[in-house]
Amino acid sequence: MRDVPPPPLPGEEDAGPSDPESVARAICLQSLSQRARTRAELETALRKRGVPDDAARAVLTRFAEVGLIDDGALAADFASAAHHERGLSARAVAIKLRQRGVDEPDVQAAVSHIDADSEQAAAQALADRKLRGLRGLDPHVQVRRIVSLLARRGYSPGVAYAVARHVVADAGLEAIAEADL
Image 1 (cartoon, rainbow, N blue to C red):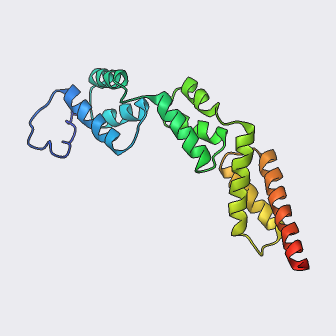
Image 2: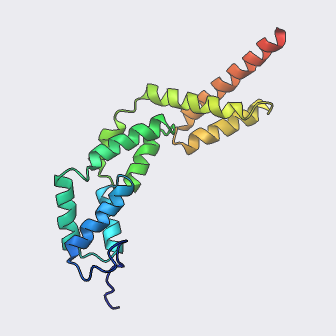
């Protein structure tokens, strides 16, 4: 297999041959301009573009020193957003962070801010939203679909069933109360 140089970056077509660290810097800056990335994601991008490992390591170390790469901060921001906005459980957040290549100490620090009360509240909010689309269905079907949603978001079966039963029961009581009026 022959060595093929990485394809040129946009605006780099006429630039001629560059040293590997310049190419690595350009690739990293382009990737980071799109969204925050972990060190592992940038390593993968550099490897795919054919950047030598020593040049990649040097650039990534320098980027970490100046704060352009901070897996701990990225993990904390991601964990907060994924939990509060998407309703993911701490377990699901940890899995997603590990998939992105975040080291275990950073994963644990990021998910340590998600406590049981916060998970319960997030599960409750998800179940309430889901129930709006399930009006008119059999309560058993409602419970099953809510449990499925919560399971996909990483909640334990115990939490998922308890929240689903509670939300469906409350909705049934409200329906009875409205019918009596």
